[in-house]
Image (cartoon, each protein chain N blue to C red):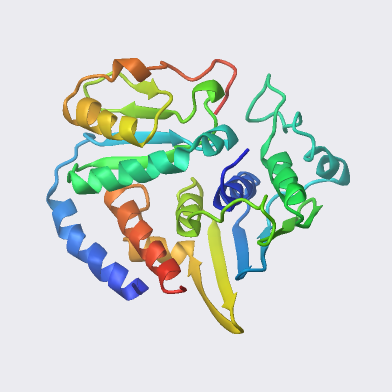
Length: 185
Length: 126
């Protein structure tokens, strides 16, 4: 089981990238002291209704990554964490169009995992191989006041001279993304 | 920090990078980031590598993520490729082991014997 909500995000977002999505969107809204609402939307290959049912099975995988193994824990982990902490989970998908995950965590529930480092989750997602756009829309609502930011993978990589594999570029990206989070609080 | 500030920082570092003569001398650090790796704490390993490389000013290092290498029982795993050394997969890597890998393997050219797990499992296809 993953330790933090940020870990669940990276796992799901990796699925979107592996589904050959040209664009992956993460909408993350934190209602401080109340709940977190998350949407992960991609325009990848999508899933049939039959596959959509199977992804909830921890012993199901699509057979491409692990030819002889039958385990696919990412989505079952997420569903279990949401269920244990009184949240909501929904997934819809269409072949050729993409997939949308919507889930929430109740921040008042003792079993809700800590949020973790969202800037690190964004960085890890941007570091996945591929030519995809990743849009991270982050909102934090506290005492009626809303703050937020949006980062785009293509813009960040462009600002870094087109490379996010060199260690020094990754460090700069890490510091940049962390500063966006720090400005929210 | 704005994107413009980030671009300026990057431009400042670009001059240093352009002076380096790499000629295929890059070090590659590849961190397993499948569900197993994530669950085992690979995020902390990635962070440790990035921070230590910057702190020790180690140059010519590429850091990437990969999926599960089939060594789920010893995650977090890290593959290290250093010119002149055998490609090595390390297992049970945490932040301290990451720093040891940089100090011993990358800089000192000496394997970290306690954590070697050789090649990816044979039933994993890339």
